[in-house]
Length: 172
Image 1 (cartoon, helix red, strand yellow):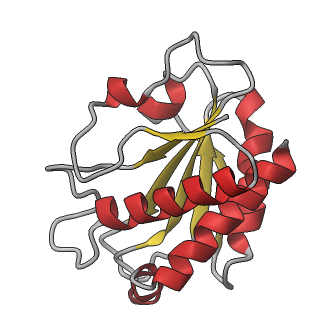
Image 2 (image 1 turned 120 degrees about the horizontal axis):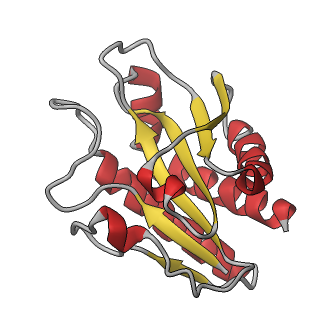
């Protein structure tokens, strides 16, 4: 089973003030596409939010009673005050989550040629407090003109979702 967490939502747009593409919208779109891709492959896939509403950080974390074979994937897009920043990076917190992050990262990098910002350990709330194997995927910089242009395209968001699903499937 997979718990999909589309980043941000509601009053929280994600990113930085004034950025043209809203992170909450493209993250939700990729997450919905990922859910469909996983269900087509026979996975059980649920989402922490299905619309443009706020979910408190603690509400994004599955209960410890979640099945041991369940994984958690948080979908985000990056932003920076430097418009030259670009690329894909994938985060994990625990050593048991690192292989999942590596599989997803390797597949997401094949969506298009971009900067490989790596697989990194981080203490983000949704990773640090998660009882599941959990990763957070940053699918490009919405403050970078090339990455933002791609994020606006439904075909690109579909490829991201399919490739994240491929990484999950390879991990299993």
